[in-house]
Amino acid sequence: MNNKHAFVIFITALLLIIFTFTVVYNNAGVDVLNPQVITKTVDDKTSYELNYSLAAGGNFKVLDCESAYYTSDDQFIGKSSTVLENITIGGIPMYENITMEENAGNSTPKKVKISIFKQKLTPEQKLANGTYAVDAFYEKTFDLK
Image (spheres, rainbow, N blue to C red):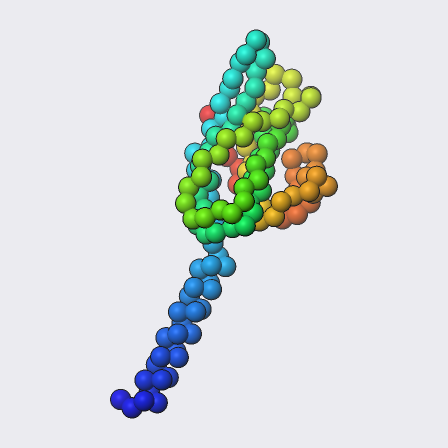
């Protein structure tokens, strides 16, 4: 094999490696594991906390984790949010206090929709009914036990 063939093979391998790392970096994702709502009662006042594990498959500057809570008949009853910065690959335990809507009464969260954004949302981007004015990077609805 002469130097010309070795050079072509080297350049081809280099381009393939660059392409592979670019695809892996740009397609880094997240996943939510084991969401649970914890009920706390103090002095006849009930509050709720969402616990889950956020699995990050890449590095992110900002992740805005927004959660919307619904009854079993899909009535919006509350929300919570957490903003994370400088996230690296791995698992992150999440604990969010749920802010219940005034009209929720004694309703208990039975479903949670977790939406994750690659930017910090402004108050104008968070709509009143648990939806958002921008598209989520990750979004999934879970049934709660």
